[in-house]
Amino acid sequence: MQNLARYINVETLEATHMRMDAKKALGIDKVSKEDYSVNLIENLESLVTRMKRGSYHRTMPVNDLIKKLNQRLQGYYQYYAVTDNTKEVKRFLKKIKWLLYKWLNRRSQRRSYTIDTFYKGLMKSNPLVEPRIKVSLFYNR
Image: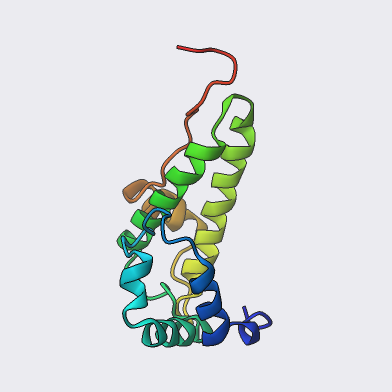
């Protein structure tokens, strides 16, 4: 993030926002392009400062973070969970769990989770959505 942060600014985000198609579906936060455009400059300035500070979603409670992550995973599975791709989708979930473990331990100077407390505690109480085959390429029902 440190190397890429210099490319993130209000002007480039504003240009990207203007190029977006307004007919696309709402984002995960249910905000449309028109709603976000009402206070566009203020919204973008807030977003840029949070991203550069590294606090973008970092202070979100773990339950809310996992809920949002599960929503994203559902969308990923709906697109990629086809018959012959099961192994890769499960590998992706394993990588996501590892990245979540690393990311949660960076939220403070102390280590928040050990491997055991992460997998046996947090992942048992707040499980991530497991992949299931959404589309069978070989059989029509």
